[in-house]
Image 1 (cartoon, rainbow, N blue to C red):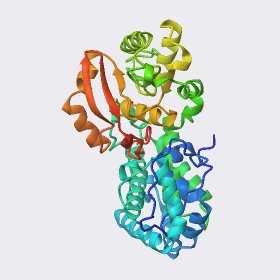
Image 2 (cartoon, rainbow, N blue to C red):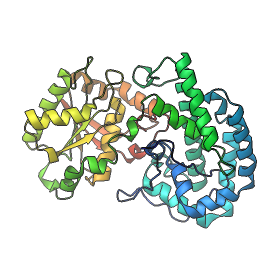
Image 3 (cartoon, helix red, strand yellow):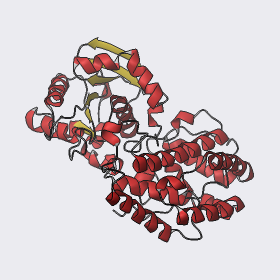
Image 4 (cartoon, rainbow, N blue to C red):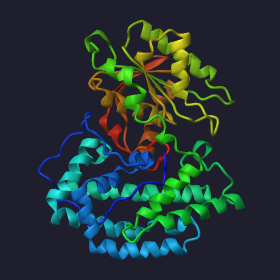
Length: 409
């Protein structure tokens, strides 16, 4: 895949007033495809602005864009480090206003954009907001997400989770600095007179993730293909036969170079026993490339292999969620899979793990961490009936994409 072969979208010239309809998130929604999966997952607003022709034409004609395109093109040519081209607060605020103005001036074209945004679910946290507010918040999220990457992978500071997300190289080394120079030179050469002001910062941000081998969010996509057999089976399930829609098993990464830890195997054994007893028709194994740092193994992929080969669980009953890096996103991503695959969200899901992790999940500390890192609770009505499992109701706020966690947005 060519991670640099993509075009960013015009952003500033139009945003909508409140549209008459506010469509609900649609599990059958077909996501528009940006050439770069990292952009598509972290910054879907940019993808929409590029691939919706009527919206793209509007922003390309906007006079504010012309001025700021020139400013940022000059800034890129003179920049020495990625942090030199961050989107400053004044620029973010300026284009927040710009979006609102475009919504008022071009309600039909911008209404199309809003339909996609709401149906995708990626902006679900703002689903009850007026269109102008949703657009403003989506743009601000995207801008701050780009800035986060530019700063973190230039300075190796400011990471939310430094032990697993940090730069793969010593950022002050001559070799790394040379690599950054080459990256910025490449982006500058590909920047044309038609490039939009945020296109260069975004291109550099994506390049930084690829340079540091942190393209995790682009791996195993689309999950509908990775889990094709299981997703097909979901459509035929008789949900009335089961107490739960799925068993969620969070991963436990090894501290060494092993492909799966003893703790991970133990969680799998507990889950397999519950599956064989008929508690749920599906198992969601959840965990990405987490421990140790730079591991080639995704926890979920290895857990599925173990459960199929050693615990005799049918392969088409196991759904792989290979991106989660924390307990918060184990639950969040399982909710996303349940929604996308067509599981009934009114049915409870069961989280299966060791007693220590479930004690943490059931505690106020976990709820506080969800609020701090996700800005919402990914599940409601948690009930722990046993040391090794607790149940919950999925919450659709989990569909919200998080550009401040670019390895698993």
